Image 1 (cartoon, one colour):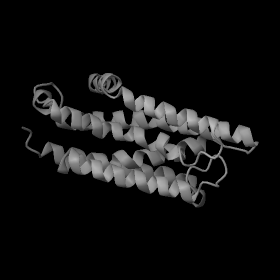
Image 2 (cartoon, helix red, strand yellow):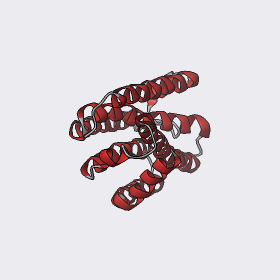
Image 3 (tube, one colour):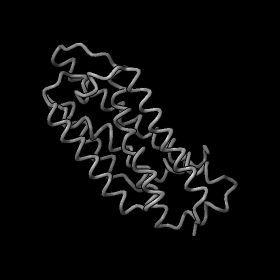
Length: 206
């Protein structure tokens, strides 16, 4: 499992360098420019799409056939992608939280870092929770359209809530109890992982 995740991180750093430049630009703009609600969803959500990008790259390189010869189960292969997604989303959530902290310091607004991070993390995990099962069932092409649709929704929500105080990633979270966000995230992500494992274990791999 550790080797699979290490491989994903290494390949990501090599094959998706432009993505990290793109993310850095959004981070710098988010820190430098007041009113960054538009940028925060990108920082929190887009890193979660890297797991799907990795699957697309593996399909192109015929990785599935090679992976079948490794001493790992299909469940472990799927689990590695979900853990990889969590690592990437954690990094994005950290950057998004940092943007909120900087904005709060600039305006003098109060901010509670842990809830903000959890909100960003929850937002970020929505994308892989939806994308990964679709990826395994329908392939990477249809998953790209789903990703674009979800990101557009996040942008619209961010624009509509651009006047929220620093620390409010999306205003709808303000009315949801902290524990409910954590529970909903856990259920969604766990259900996505279980379904993906179930499907891949029964799928014929070329």
